[in-house]
Image (cartoon, rainbow, N blue to C red; front, side, top):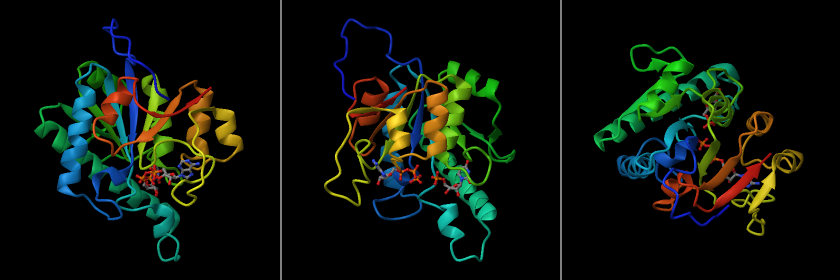
Length: 247
Ligand SMILES: Nc1ncnc2c1ncn2[C@@H]1O[C@H](COP(=O)(O)OP(=O)(O)OP(=O)(O)O)[C@@H](O)[C@H]1O
Ligand SMILES: O=c1ccn([C@@H]2O[C@H](COP(=O)(O)O)[C@@H](O)[C@H]2O)c(=O)[nH]1
């Protein structure tokens, strides 16, 4: 997806977006945890995007902390428990992100799908919308709040609940390919494709539940590279370079 901005347009292209940020945005490439410099950089990118006038909600993943399936692999920890641990990892990421946004002057709130009343607001749909209308960046933590899901599904769910115009999936690759480009250097990139094609081909850039929920609710998805400076703001403005998955 790429398009030329209309210089006469004073309104932003999107009124409200859901930005799905990989947890790996918060750590150095190939490492784990939270790196202060990476956090500061990604925080700055989100502030740039938020300043453009589009209401910005963020779902942050937890791949830099714990992935439930990997944690449960050797059978010591049950998958459901490992998934709750994974969700708590996303809460840690969300708190870190909120902190850096506010340090950079951007008001932000964390709304958690799991009740953790001492550290974050619990998700209430009306409150989320109210925060967005007041210009705060809303960070949704703990995915769907249920094990056996992912934060991609959480992004699709929250996007539907808040009436987002689009899900913007910020990731390590620059779009959707016919196979995983990290594993296959000959993978071919799509400029745009339909939900049916993404689902039929089982393209693993997002999970099936997330694709299906966005499809059923008519919410397009843009998959784009998060590490290019300025790119998050461009994609939020509707002029970035990514793959558009559309109904
Ligand atoms: N067909 C495909 N096209 C593009 N990417 C693909 C495809 N199949 C698999 N991938 C992989 O999917 C990954 C995107 O998922 P990513 O790791 O960003 O998300 P996540 O799992 O939601 O985030 P987190 O790191 O927080 O767990 C890419 O890095 C890419 O390697
Ligand atoms: O709704 C959800 C969301 C996430 N989880 C668990 O958290 C980790 C991290 O999320 P990613 O989407 O992989 O970044 C995930 O592996 C699950 O274990 C969950 O259980 N439910």
